[in-house]
Amino acid sequence: MPPLFTGKPIVWYEHLNSTNEFAVNQIKKGLVGEGTVYAAYHQPGGRGQRENKWHSEQGENLTFSVIYEPIFLDATEQFYLNMAVCLALVKFLKTDLNIDAKVKWPNDIYVEYDKIAGILIENMLKGQNLSYTVIGIGLNINQDLFDESLRNPTSVKMITGQRFAIEPLLESFLGYLEAEYLLLKALRFADLYERYIQNLLFYNEERLYSAYDDAFTGKITAITPEGKLIIETSTGQKAFGFKEVEFMV
Ligand code: BTN
Image (cartoon, rainbow, N blue to C red):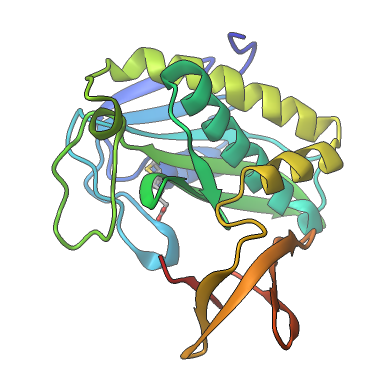
């Protein structure tokens, strides 16, 4: 379904240091409304999670930020926004491109063992509620050569063998994102959670993890409402926050 208010407008820039950085500044200046999207063909200072940089070759991939005003969300519910964004990406990849993707907790999008998209969400609070969110997404489309330092990147082209025009893909994706965002706005948390879990990489599979320099096997059995990962091990259940556990893939 085409979106009603997401990507109205989509503002494309030839160069932006970081679309997230730009979006945050525009919000601070009071210059944006709900649904605005900033997209860049070239993003030399792309921000990634854990203070990493996001590398993307000029003109080859989608690098963009979506601004919403989720004032209906309490700060303790913000992980449901991550779920909505992940689910939109998985559904878009499956429906439009026939690519089977999974969510690697908390919010990476993987195809088998390789990362096709990264998400960096920056939330702003007003009191106990969210006021604005900047949803930054890097989705690899046509790039098929990546820096050696990156562990396991992949792209739509590497999977399908085809090149795609990036602008129509962004427009279509925004329809999926808006649909999930509207579910979030209707506070359909259980629905989002169920589908997030169903699409989670290694859910309920015995796998190897590492935490605090200790390797162990266990099964992901749940995610807490705050977004912690629950892993069941031979010695009981453990809850891990972001950055506290690594997947040994
Ligand atoms: C990750 O490390 O996996 C998250 C990467 C997020 C990259 C996107 S690209 C568009 C937006 N602008 C940024 O500076 N970062 C995000």
